[in-house]
Length: 251
Image 1 (cartoon, helix red, strand yellow):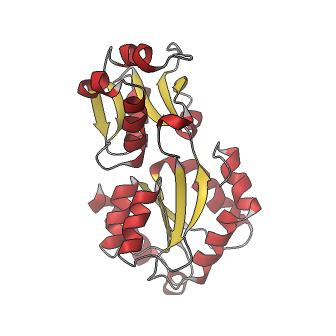
Image 2 (spheres, rainbow, N blue to C red; image 1 turned 45 degrees about the vertical axis):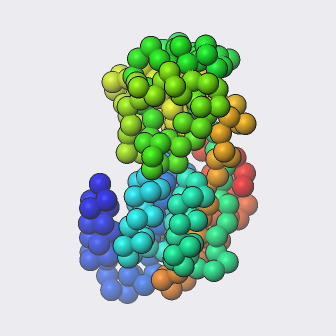
């Protein structure tokens, strides 16, 4: 997956005219940001700017690509830990890091499935332990870490963990539920909202896991003026309104 991402970015640069290579921003964003960032890029293009090139994957994979020198101007992570890692390596432009949006963690089932309603703790664990549970890999992916934290807080992780199907990112976990491969999945509320093939089955209490934040920063190697302008646009009231329409909470 990381190799495919690198090929995509390099191919994008090779096919672009030489003059455009210095103008078109390249944005690496967490998989759960796909619809919102696409909307923002479209709005930016309608305003007369070059449309940003967007690449989506797990935050961990994107951070490793940045460490490896992948061409990019902006990074949007699904948590602070991978952004912290890049900051410790001095790969972020000083002063450019900010909170872009906030999210919510939920359980989904295939459309037509039953809601878990207000189930908590052992009751929730019994339902989720009844079959495979899809979630992003807790060992590397923010959505997975949030999910493990929530289940642990509610006393359910010990029961559920043997049934967990670990996906490479949150959208891969969502796809498993959409296909009916698993009865339940842990994703962000915005992922559930983006798919007509799943329904909301339950919502984790906000205090059961660390706050879900999406930090954004400019990559220190970037000298792209359009990249910095798009960065500012995303943080502006207009950019925040686009994210809100996709279900993200204000930063």
